[in-house]
Image 1 (cartoon, rainbow, N blue to C red):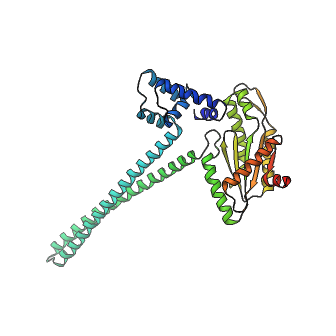
Image 2 (tube, rainbow, N blue to C red; image 1 turned 60 degrees about the vertical axis):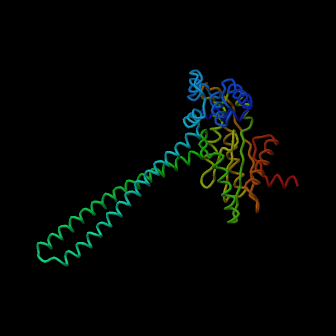
Image 3 (tube, helix red, strand yellow; image 1 turned 90 degrees about the horizontal axis):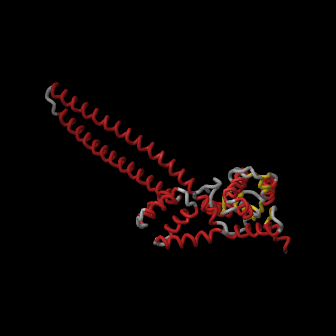
Length: 352
């Protein structure tokens, strides 16, 4: 569901969909809050999806569309709502485990204190023991107390071991949640948030260490034509194909991301412009050499081409400025006829 709506919102149909959303929300008496608007975008973007069916059920039953209903639908059907719920669940589990461990440690501290009192008492009784029988009684009592505290310590060790395993499982789950939050659902590349954070970190590291950093921006040529001719599902197929080629290019420490719509970005740490230019040319050639077919009908879509621009980080330059220059190089590729790679520095020297 999210993929269909995301693609629609990045095309000319977005404005019509937004107007329909507002009109139908007004007709249904639903306030256009940000959560409601997003819910109805998904509802009208894919009316036969689970969310669309649930909203139709609510309206048909005459149930009021309250904030509580909105929050419930958002938590159940919107990707960010599900992510927030997973994080809240993880927090509850962690809180439960920490409370359990704290209780176990407090109990162990009490047991140790009591055992210390037993030892102190046994020491005094042994000094005052007048006969072997009384001494044996003291020793038996001491042995019983020792066995008791040993069992309590063993129980505590098991409790701590179980909590350690549960926290490790929780940490692994949260790491997966974090990866999901940083991954584009359509392409499995890094998403815009992950790209922004990684680019800032790479720029900082490059300035600190005095190393090269090159940023490339890639765009699918004539993508609107694919969507208008073949529909959004075929457009998604084209996006996934280009993403798969870029994904193979982006071996560590490189990073490829879906920047938005049909646009991608690739970060090249510790590489010079010539190396990046050659890598992008290989990608451009591979993509253009293949004729795609529509999966559902096997219709031939023809060749897909990309345009790319790249820029090398200048001394003291910010991530935003670097991205701006890479974008300018991309536009130069577009204006130069598409299906080409442009180096920002080379274009600047040629224009001087």
